[in-house]
Image 1 (cartoon, one colour):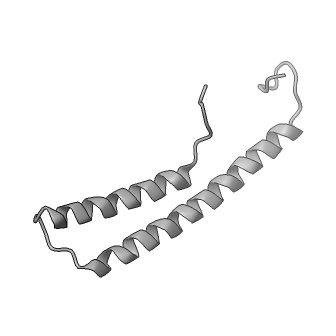
Image 2 (cartoon, one colour):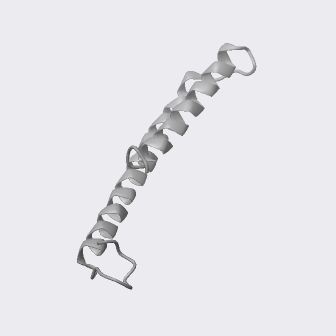
Length: 81
């Protein structure tokens, strides 16, 4: 059993923010040159994408919850009592 509900929007936001951290770490380590304005679209786009993913995930979760609540229960239906 999972301890908490899976939230894909937070996963997407975390991936984009880790990407921003890796880009800045590479710049600080001298591996490449990164202008400051490059990460603005990366972070902004990542947060907007995470918001869209979160909205879609919540709507899917609510739709599945409503479908399960209205489905008949009992033997042979596949839904627990």
